[in-house]
Image 1 (cartoon, rainbow, N blue to C red):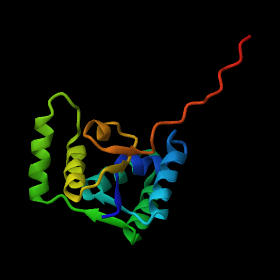
Image 2: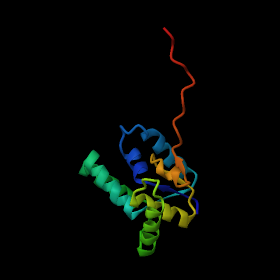
Image 3: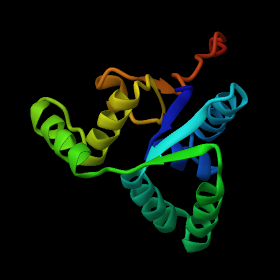
Image 4: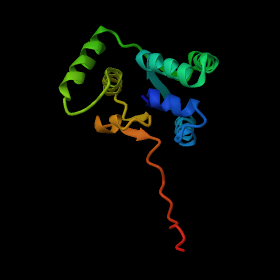
Length: 148
């Protein structure tokens, strides 16, 4: 499948114009779509995203995001059924040295099942779990500050 997973942090970066990663996250999303990929997300991620948008940007923004996501033919929603839930529970308790959220674990299970390697997110936990994250790190300026 030619697809990229989109995590809550990726959706938020795209939705919130003042998010430091806004432009880079939108560019990563648009590049994936331009390359013919579909976006994949989960019902757990949608739950988190709607809640965060409502609290940070307001109910109107959450409703607008919902309409756009729900109507998109280029977005595939994956459901966390009982089998995926159980696998996520196992991952959650397996990695005692990580602070993965349960939703993160459901995302990891879905990504592995669908053989997805990339996620649009600003959450470094996806990298800890072995996935590539988009957008990549910010490009560092090659210019040095002027000395006085």
